[in-house]
Image (cartoon, rainbow, N blue to C red):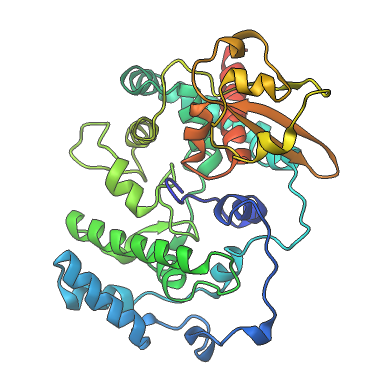
Length: 364
């Protein structure tokens, strides 16, 4: 899911998605007796939102804000169906669930995905080269994103996006630690989808995507589609479902908008001087670049090679490996830019390493 998705993976990757979508800290689910029953709990699973007064009230508000036909908006939202399993999948993992970079990595860097990446790159080499030249985003990063998201368009999701966004707009689980913030996010995305469908003359019920509402081979949320998707094949329309060129150009445009710096590495190797290491303060900013190279050295990080000449800010990124020792890298602003696509350092490393593996496979 680009942006806040954004973007999100599918049912086989529930744990991975939970880390990315729901934040890095696992939070206990409140006891059932503390929860008031939601409106959906009083209705049978799979009900239509036409029966919900709050949904119809929002339909009227969206129509007024966006200058849309209120009957059309009511019909679209009213035809959306509640999908109960979605509200389970967006909950964070249970307290005590250990993150494991090696396990996470194995879900994305495998022979099937690498072979698909080589095929994708070979078929779209000229477009990838053009995008890299125009936007400054390396081809292997674009290839890594589309591969991690959908195996190069093979798995874009079969949920009706209207169903997914309506479910998460009106029945987002109260047990989530950021329920109000996330509910508002999905309400905004629902509004963006309706506006997008109206402008393009599409039926909003025809859009298919992930269970969080992300669409197309790069898995853009509706707001990211509106802001960053571009017509890169020159056919006069933006199509992230069928046009590989539009997907490639849109991913590159997204990263440029989020501050990608051409020529800057995504990360450096991390080594430590144990006698001076202040790991707690180094990890406090999480993945946000906050330290100069000199500040990292003062806190016990040993820099080598290119890292010693880095002029921007850096972050120490921790990748936990379950019960084994954690892995560490030194992230740059470009590493941080990848996490703007999906707010997870594990995701960013998977994108980087898949792109590298595909590039290496092409050279063999």
